[in-house]
Image 1 (cartoon, helix red, strand yellow):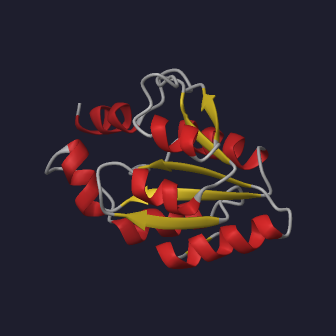
Image 2 (cartoon, helix red, strand yellow):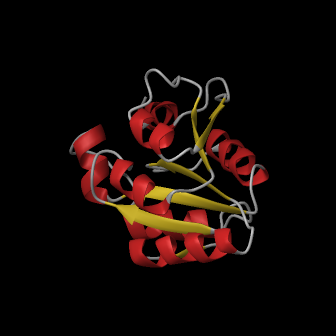
Length: 155
């Protein structure tokens, strides 16, 4: 089971772990209504390293990205659900639209993003290049998204 940690804690965990030869894969997202696409994405992220980190958009951050009607689930609930997954080792919240500052502070070995991005379109491109962070793009599960789940519920 995973653990919700502060930004300071995750920086120390990664630095100490890397000094011992452990690897860390990080990803980010809202993970508002967990579905099979999320689970497979998180499993793939975990399979790439010794430890996985989910940089979770705070409620404030989700509202900036998705609008006033989101998130459906509050940040503490989303963090607890993610932490219940065996493929998630650490969850850390961030307040901004992008995890760029946190990603630069953590400096994981690997950063995963959805395959709708490329290195050229990746908002964190400069950070991953500067810090020599390997980027792995993970394919989506066709038809599985939080928006689809919401539309099905209200449709």
